[in-house]
Image 1 (cartoon, protein in one colour):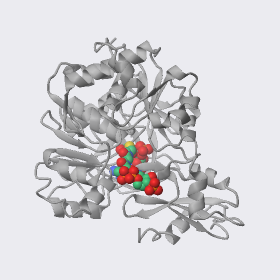
Image 2 (image 1 turned 180 degrees about the horizontal axis):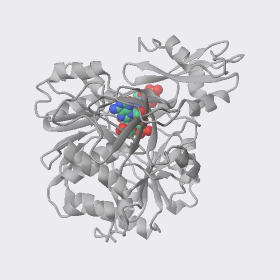
Image 3 (image 1 turned 135 degrees about the vertical axis):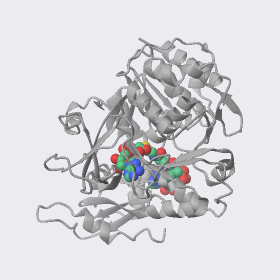
Length: 502
Ligand code: MLC
Ligand code: AMP
């Protein structure tokens, strides 16, 4: 047995002198140099006691070393567990308690707050925005050769946490083959080759930036302009030397807002991909008018990787997410009966394929609830298939807000708000936001509910900034239906324009 993912993703290029990463200071890192970095990390983790199956959690800034940590952990037989840098120590505490990682790698600035979460000082390492820290110190004195620890197609390669409708986050377990099969299919479907240069400005703690973007470029043998995040001037500066870009819709609306973003700037680009949140058809149209490019929209999830994609050749239809990718099955069913619906009817989207995860970490009941008997994953998204199998996502059966590509589950926020002094009850909704697609809004009842500013202050230890309500409203009572359920649709309508001037 070999290491399934590493053998396919990295091993073929381990000795290649071709460029892999163009770093923020414009220096170039070859595949060989990167693979050496991966090996040093793997050696360092094993020397520190990592055994196959152990988790390696990381809440670190985005640098090439973050990618090396991901693959170093996998090559050493472990599972990578990346965490959003915006999470508070309280939020990280839950993930650590739930996943029991062997190592937690964090920004040195967060060390004092996070170290107490781990059982011993030697299980905490640091990595900063310049690539320095105790992980780097330890890795740099390790050898740059490492025999990959054997791992099978069905072994765990990563755990990515997604919030749940009940407020408790669930760790989606992703296997070597989940990651490999999806990367291989996407590379072919989107025609990535070693001539490609991807402008990479997404975070690498989510499926989109970590697996879709980085894995695909490795499969193709292409290179990435690896930026620490989305910053408009850096995007404008780098677009002319890229052949492709992947982004959430906010990337596209922000670029369109910049007069420098025009046809000439993107003359060298062959492909723009959008996903993680709905791209408005009007953005698609405005983008084509400005640049001559039709954005290729695709649809995926943490639990499944990518499920559907508009075609590379052929009709990229605005407002749709395209047909199922090769090897992936999509069906739309009646949420009540489970019966497959004919084309044109709206129902629950279900997916099956090698990309679909085996389940949630240590939550067999939750896993069972979200799969059908014949092995389809119930996505929680509502959609409809056309006669020629293009999927359109029309809404969500799950109570979820997607803000700038980050998921926010209202229940998690409501549990925190309900516990604040002066609050009777709360309802959290997502309403249209020009920049983030949806913005988080809280509606509170109670004798003397806290103001918007007070809410942000009071929840700052418990909720990452992107989850905090950007607007807070006070009402005497929440609207309810005859069953006593809060009518969020009424609230969404009532506050639909509250961000219009933002
Ligand atoms: C930042 N802020 C956000 C936010 N991002 N608020 C709501 N939603 C967001 N997404 C807040 C900050 O807390 C801060 O608040 C203020 O906005 C400015 O912060 P910033 O750091 O300057 O923002 P910026 O760097 O511009 O970030 C915006 C962004 C970023 C859109 C570039 O959010 C981003 O990179 N999103 C991509 C998410 C992603 O990769 N999703 C993929 C999930 S995978 P304050 O109050 O402090 O001023 C997935 C599967 C699939 O879904 O299909 O791909
Ligand atoms: P996550 O849990 O972060 O992986 O988010 C997955 C969710 O993002 C999906 O269930 C969809 O609701 C949403 N999503 C991803 N891509 C798209 C898209 N292209 N259009 C609409 N929604 C999308």
